[in-house]
Image (tube, rainbow, N blue to C red; front, side, top):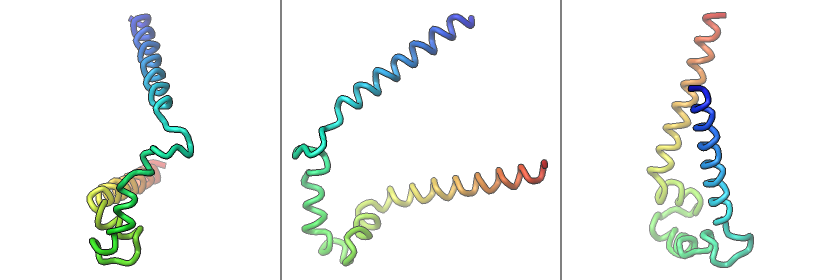
Length: 96
């Protein structure tokens, strides 16, 4: 049983290594003009961001208006992690 488990672990590690290698091979080279960061979305944010959101701070506009749900979920995850840390510390101090 342990030998089968070890073979499974080795195969799983090989699969993960292969997936990482394939992912890294798809990363564009630095300075390439067709990089995902050099696409039309950046130009749209710069050209129409102030008119669409009404704010003058472009970074805040992107975070609040364009990525509002994503930011809300990130804040929820961060808040949950902080509460879990405090509860863990409190439980540890009670048992000490």
